[in-house]
Amino acid sequence: MVTAPSSRLVDGFGRHIHYVRISVTDRCDFRCVYCMAEEMTFLPKSEILSLEEIEQLAAELVQAGVTKIRLTGGEPLVRPGLVGLVARLRQLPGLAELCMTTNGGRLAELAGPLKDAGLDRLNISLDSLQPERFRALTRTGDLSRVLAGITAAREAGFKGTKLNAVVMKGRNDDEINDLVAFALEQQLDLSFIEEMPLGVIEEHDRAEAFMASADIRSQIGQRWQLSPLAESTGGPSRYWQVVDHASRIGFISPHSHNFCGDCNRVRLTTEGRLLLCLGNEHSVDLKAAIRQGDPAPAAVSARVQAALQAAMGIKPEKHEFSLAEEPQILRFMNATGG
Ligand code: SAM
Ligand code: SF4
Image (cartoon, rainbow, N blue to C red; front, top):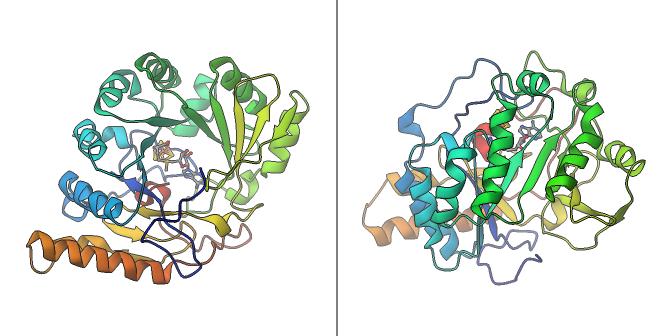
């Protein structure tokens, strides 16, 4: 989808913001080695947005021109009341697409209710098809539950489900083609994500594990014919069609391909900050805009809209990720809406 020029959210580089990823919780039932430390300190409840506040901010964002929302986390499915939130967000006039990124661990129970609530699409993370390795990479995850979740999503009627895999050298890079074969068999798209240096994790060396998209693609190319697709989703994925198959293979390459030029997105963190770029700290505090000052709805709305416009002025041109240095970004992916 090419960005439509109607959004009132236009940054200093002329980019129209149509897409917001909302982290509905920083908590998770998994502890993926690249995402979280084994022992995590989560935010106190008073600091995280309530479901009503998430709904209120989503409504303001849609009013300002956002047409696509992705719910993420942490693990969105562990947030109590999530299905109700989906149903309410679905009612927002002007919202074209409501999606979710999930680890899939609770989808077997929740795929049907989410579909009924109006969720449009799912991305499901899957880094290994080997049960023991899956457990090691996620520290707590049960592969059979995730596979059951993928089946449940199909049975519930979800279309266009995409799998996401982070490939780490020496940990799961021998499974690249197994993951592709699985995606082809399931007729699902699959994106490979280069690991990003978000948060310091003692027991995991990101530079050592780093695997560039080009190397992943060349492994796949030895077994299947890939044909590049010209269409842009306005996002960081670049897609290849697997010739003679329904599936597309995407590559999200924050290191080897800078995709910031056509960035159309911002993120709402669990604690209510609008984060302007995953690779920078620039943000505005939307929670303060709703919790502080005159509580009359018109006044709150005016404060939020003013904060959104101010945010556009500080959206950075591009991210700065470097594998050679210590992570510059100390926050973890789970709180920021990865
Ligand atoms: N819990 C859900 C899940 O795992 O899909 C949603 C949140 S998770 C933070 C969203 C995506 O970010 C997942 O596909 C995960 O693999 C990816 N991710 C987490 N930390 C990452 C990192 N440091 N670099 C690249 N991708 C990361
Ligand atoms: Fe949880 Fe997703 Fe992070 Fe894994 S990547 S620890 S599932 S939030």
